[in-house]
Length: 301
Ligand code: CP
Image 1 (spheres, rainbow, N blue to C red):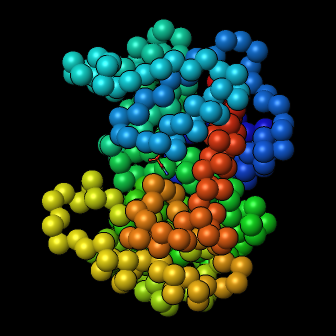
Image 2: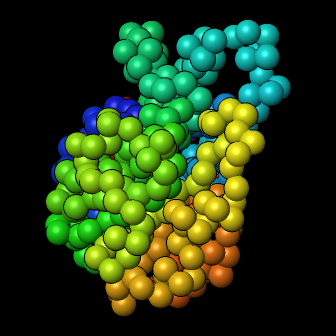
Image 3: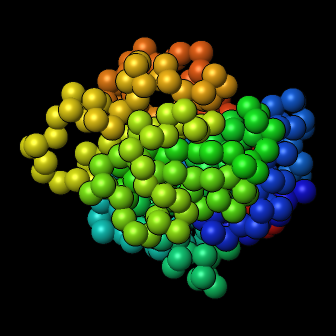
């Protein structure tokens, strides 16, 4: 059984830990009973950026595990009076919260929390700025593993707004480490050298007939500032997965997207729920991946 003190970044996880969490998520899909300490356990979900999937699927996972989830609405907390993240977590820890799931706009916000001697609760990262999205990575790996059995030799394209994407960073790092070949695509100005060590940048048309996984990313307008030149149609035609391009994918290739999807921008509307798409499956898998993560940090307490 995997035991973790915190779950904040794929960089801090070994391959064995990731594969162990995937295996445990699979057991939860098959109805395994959770193995968590026999005591009252409180969890708090602190989302300083909006979320549908991550927030709600962590809540479903917490209820399936029988945990006591404390509602925490950042807009009605003392954060509005200037309370820092450290002081919020210090307070929750002091009143008995065992796990804080946190999404925050600042890259690596978790560093000051996991290295503080004063804080004992486990920190689970629900996404930090353009840094990491490790629970999304785990559910994406689970979806790929269900399809292909392993990662060795798989060819995976990550396409779109790479430099702003915590999903791209976590997935590229972990996929490469597990033996997959990663490619990137999308506007060159949304790619940066920090990704070059994980894979080559190519046009989407060069990748269509070679990849096993076509993973599209959301255009993150909220991280671009004022950009009045962006055209959805032009983006879709030049960088997106159009219906015509999807017809050139390998017969057993799958289409993934962490969602929310900008339909007809990253990929054609009718491809979102198409037979080769696993986007809805990714959302379902998120519950089981997050059950495995929560169980691991409760085992590591
Ligand atoms: N994929 C993802 O993180 O979605 P949410 O922002 O809705 O949580």
